[in-house]
Image (cartoon, rainbow, N blue to C red; front, side, top):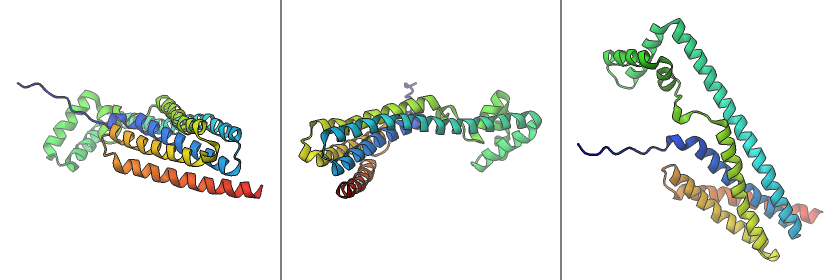
Length: 231
């Protein structure tokens, strides 16, 4: 027999990958937009840098808290569904077996075979079978609030550091274009890396995130320039 090669799947990465990519992209976009907006209104390097650092800290905390609350809500919903399913399994196991069999029939399994599969899976772990095939809940997609919060907050900070570093090295007269250019390059790279980590093609995600980053920075720069002239 030949050596069995394990298949690689990417669905198990969706939880932390989504939070990490979202956090890093938001860190770059929001911090760069803030820096460019402030620079358009006030050319003081100190004011621009202060705004960038403050935005990084506030954004990281906000992302972590928001991600924790969001994923916790998803987890609470799934737990409530599992409790309800467990009660139904206890009250009427025969109906639950028939329900599981119907699911397999809709997927193309012969009715008699579907019934046998449902009975065997119910005998091994009825709740796991219904969670996976009826509710779509599995270990690979289980919400992990703390993991998501840490990934989101840390990745936001990592993303935000990029435009801040660009602010530190850029000449004051060229601050906005340097920060914008470095940030767009970073966004394209992050979009490509996130896509590759998830097993997808890199080009379209890179262009997509760069486009939205350019739009955000352009609008913020315009607002900053208007406020600067009005002040």
